[in-house]
Image (cartoon, rainbow, N blue to C red):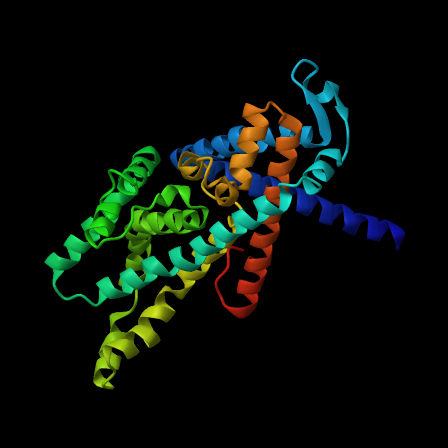
Length: 324
């Protein structure tokens, strides 16, 4: 009985081995047949490994008192000391508050703006007017950050800006908009909306183009108005794309654009413009406090990861669309 059982087990093992060999052989043939496609995949994969995963090795300096002379492994291990220093810093709550205010403001205003534009353009019957609006709204996306900030500073200048000229024409005093802390978040957010609304609308227009036209025909037969078509056909049609983009935006809520904010900062508006990304740059690179800045940035990344996982889990529970 035991010998027959051993034979059966041996046959099963040989069958599994031969099946694995056949699977590997078939996989090798597929790779050889479509090697061009695998080569295309290899390039972005190498980029991710070299520039995204390998640098994670250096994240451990957040837990060390890093010294460029001694290197990463030679630097003293201090555990959570850098994090505790950040949490007890007088700037901690200011940085969190400013980052959350600007990010949430950007999400509330910037996320629905391209959706509204796309829905409005989808209802336009004149193709010439539709192309004109798309060109006008899409063009600012190609303006570089430095040029954009220069335009903002010039337009809002108390002496040269046309905004203050308009105010002066109505008998109002000139206002230094860039020097008033309470105006900073609105200037940053609405200029971002102006620059990115056309690009964002393209994604939703593509989603609207994929909606089955039979749904519109059925709605027309049923006597539905344009508003009803938008509400019952267009919005559900773009909801999967909107959900994915919302998840990605929430996952980056703590990452406010560094370049633009840093260029827009001045001594008068620092109380509302100083965010985690600019603080990390000033402390880490300008102040050469690499371990502390790495700890701050790592804390920021962990918060983003938690938000991303939470929103993705919630989206998966309430809808059919999620990142994974």
